[in-house]
Image (cartoon, rainbow, N blue to C red; front, side):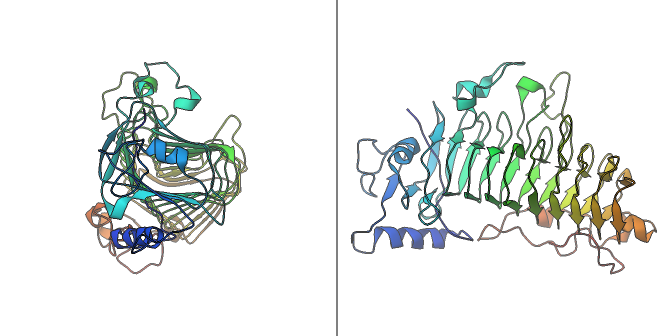
Length: 407
């Protein structure tokens, strides 16, 4: 059987209070009937039960199989150890999405250590259906509050439209923490924390914090993510042929061999903005982000010759180039970005527009030129609604220059 995870629907921001209010709205205050169904899951439940608060289901998979448009799945706190992955194949609708969330904000952990695909040997491949502790080929879901660990990918979503993924934590998985691919449009990935993901089967070649890759589809947005200490890249847009918007996101500490893999192959970019052989020309957008202390570049076009738009981003102390946008004939636009103490500030191609950036302004941009190089305020606990904490002075120019990211 399957065991499952957490998350409760909210339209924009998610708090325990809002989750509880949403459940009250669905369940009613005195058991009154509602057009939509709420299915409750608990670690001590029974999959033959009706899925009520006092008689909950045992697995998220059973609730997923029963849910239809407009329904809510509310998961009680606990650790759910999987023996098969959670497969989501039924779609909601734009007007009636299906909601999956933690009951009243309780902590729910989905543990994929017991999945066979989590232990794929070196050089092996993961069958498509086994990719992800949560494997999703469905649209119009609202998923929040899941903590997904030690799976063969955390969440793997292929051919998914109109979903909202909010306040997920995907860490210590055996492939990318979150991967969206295939024909997938209008998805929102909000306030994701994805860290410590690694891929022993490839010696670190492909496990990213967040990958939107090998597919197409407009309207995909990443906002408020933190992507750190992953074996390959923080964010990877390899072979995704439609523009992606990434904003208000930080990526750090990626690409180091913390697991002592032989023949280590991790890349170590903060934001990889494309790639392929040949790389498709795509105008991905990156704004108000910070990439620091990555093993390679802070931001790289990775061969993408398209009209990238990099606006008001900051890189700091990356081992190679802060902003690598030197693809021959590239049409990238870099404006009001800041590079601080990177091995090299920027590599700008002949076709690139570069305006108002720190390297255009000149001068020395090192630790003494910013108010603070202490990332702790930004890497600490999130706020109650899941937003990033404030870091008002982190990597902000001391002299008042209005360039770079602000958090």
